[in-house]
Image 1 (cartoon, rainbow, N blue to C red):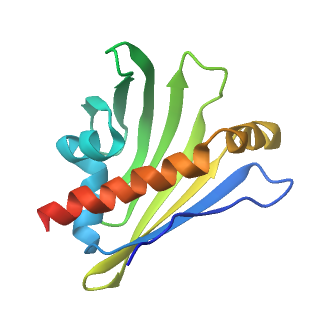
Image 2: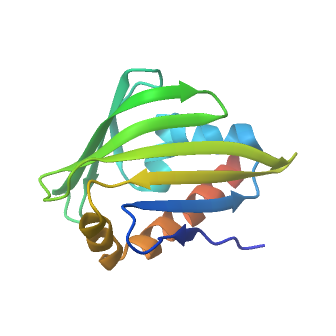
Length: 155
């Protein structure tokens, strides 16, 4: 069963709510967000730092096909509760986009399936709308599809 990532963007609000159900147990879905070797596979990025703890931080580096650095993303982890939630900032260095605040919540739907809810808050409605003009929805859906495929192999 192919699942799709759903993005809810209410007009006039500076936030998005993204939900996705995975055919994965809760513990495996959570691992996909906190184990560097898994993150690298499904995000297609290099994990330079990933401190999974309250007041920890992270830094990812994504390269283009010729090996040149396309972008670096980093942030601070404000809250970390294993198999439940991660609250963090997200900032893409070298872009005009302001940092965003992300609330990731993980929940079991059944023994073999789980749900991720991402509540993302942007600096302004205009910035959120600008992000939505990019191939954002397609990109996050593709990444979540890869997450499902890669973690299925670990299951």
